[in-house]
Length: 581
Image (cartoon, rainbow, N blue to C red):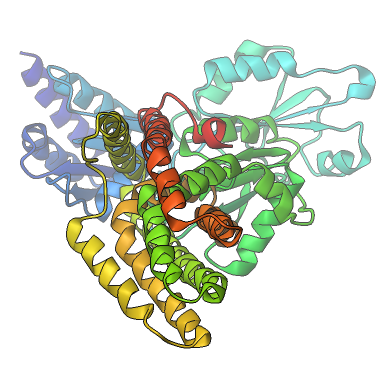
């Protein structure tokens, strides 16, 4: 029965409206394989037969894994309207109508028809024009008062905000000369006064003011032509290769359609923009870098989840505006203080006492011991330098790789590396107990790599000049460092993940790696010094065997700690700013 009545009402509606012109434009989002959409299509076709109604249709993808451009458009417009992000959906002026609620379709049709009938007296543009949002538009109310006469508008502001769903309020205190000149161009009236469009309303009757503003709630209305809004400046630094950054960028553009924003964007992939960001970090005392950076007034934000706070600040300054914040001088040393230096130091030292690295140098010295003693130091230093160069290059390569991968897998990088660190940490601790019982460790260099390492060292310690041996040792140190990475990388990879998460500044990240690698070869240099002052390779080897198990234990504890922190971060229990900052 209800459906029949709706059809009769619709026919009457069409008959009455037949001669009207096309002033009302709406956006209709739908999808294939959508049962409510199929049910709604006939109604939408009949509605479009009205001479003053235009329907712009947008088909979204039926496959959530292969979205099209209309999917992102629906996400943006739903964010702007604070509506459901689903189909079938109609956006008309400031209103939205979702037809997917079971049992509510007929009622929603009635509401849409009533709204169309109400808005046919107005020129209602499409909510979307050239891919940009035209709606929602606020009810813009200008409140003029004079504090020198003890006039206040707080009650009017509260009444409007409580009763009008989308209101933009600007206040003008004509106590100040610059505001009096603006007031002089408005229709003259006694203050305090409210302007809605070109009409003025006394604040003595707030209920009438709210009632008048509510008439424009569905279509919005601009401020008086004589009043020019003061812009609110936002500085937005982001990475153009970062998907989450682009999402924030789109939402800021949506806010710019609702408020008088002047958004200046900087892609920090460009070095000059990154340098400017450093200067703002210094001015705002920011000790951790982010891919997304929003500066507004004296506040700083870095996450999409904080955009509601950004909007609150915008609303609070609609009447006064906000100038662009100024930057100070960048100070890289201050940035470094807040980063993960302790993690880097501990990781480098623990990786340096890794049995794989120790065993190589002891093995190397044992062969040199049979040769000339004066060759030990230059060849040992060259060998260590080769290890340093190779390990640093591996670290930089991994860092660059993770920077690229992170743009596509984001937080899942922390999950993967966190799980890997936990597994390796458990195996390292198991190795500690195995070694104490005289058993073989699980995590160690494979036998075929150990044999190859031995053949290389035997070959280069043949009778040659010290200079030649030193050059060969440099190359061999490089090669053996690459071979040993299968064993030593268990610490390096989690630490690089921490570095990569701590800073987007390449220079700072590389500096971390320089420090890490220097600490990695420090134990080798200490062993070399011990040999130089009289310790034999046999004695050094015995020391290494005694420390073997404890090295495994400390590495295991370190990896377990990093793994737990990364997983806690992945599941949202902690922020890396507090964990590593």
